[in-house]
Image 1 (cartoon, rainbow, N blue to C red):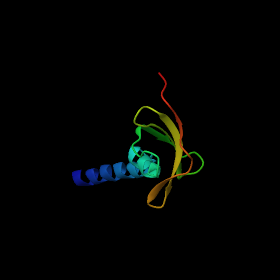
Image 2 (cartoon, helix red, strand yellow):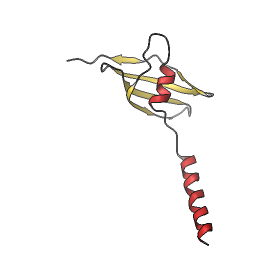
Image 3 (cartoon, rainbow, N blue to C red):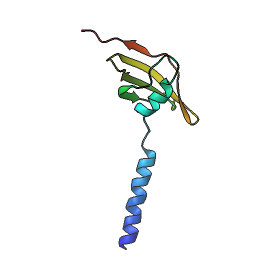
Length: 93
């Protein structure tokens, strides 16, 4: 009886984890940003989405030195790609 209850709990936790939406983080954003001339070391990453397109995410982040940036990334097969040029504001003061 205990084993059956444990199996049911594990199955319920696994199902809820599988249903939870994935949101990209620093690693996925760095992969998308890895292009010539753009640093691939974002910090303070916050990505959100999807809203309409289930593979596209809006990301806010900072670059070393404090510039605040925003861009869009998407999952393309096994890789993350940049789908909008990053817009960055330099830190003032």
